[in-house]
Length: 368
Image (cartoon, helix red, strand yellow):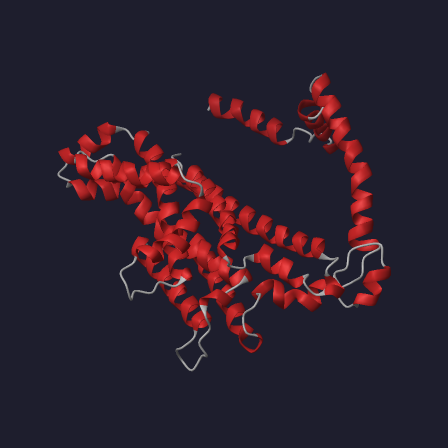
């Protein structure tokens, strides 16, 4: 009774404690994080001075003196700010490039399918096989929409798959195929079989030692020369295969970092309770190794997504290339900056969204 009666006033006093003024909390945070020492204080003041100079200029160019989306080229030529009317006039070219004009709805639908596939995958709870089925369905839907030749859709050559649909198709589905291959490579590199281990090491180290530009060039221009006579391989298939091979090598090293950090005693414990080798890998080793490797995998996924723009060097039109294509019109050639800003914002938003989702996933998967 005495303990309960003595603890009651303490609880009451804690709940009745007055809240500190918000301005005091803000000032203490600023003093601890922004004005902690001479160097931090100078950097904070310099940053504030830069923002006070830059933000008004940017807002004036972006909004105040800009021509809105409904303007025309005549208004843009006399304006001192941005010309957002360029996006209305040339937006379809930026998004789909040289895809046939009457069929551009198919390219737009393919981009939506890919984005929906990624959104569903980021919140997937249906297991690995179901996730692979989701990506396979999304890939087949993209192929049907973009290439045509089925369901009454007119055929379209792969060289005309440009802009956003191309970037999403190559980045999303090549990495979805490369990730399980990368996991297999990481396991092969740790294998006791010498031949399997040496093949995995040769694959990984060769790819990591060659720039992606060189790998793309070899896949598109050299690989067809090595094919038997009469065999034809389209450039899209070559690029797709090359990107899978390239990303798999980097994913393998990311997963190996998780395997190296794994406690080997858990494997012995799994064998002791009767689990087979493959069930130990699937139920004990890989879940923990992938969780440890998740930050590195996230970095490789985002880097691979952005590096897809390098397909422009082999004649494909990514978003940046279609932006330049849109400025080929003499009347609008002075407004490439507006297109580049929008493309940059798109990459920034999508990369931040993926990064934040994986960060939350790592937080949920981390041991309590």
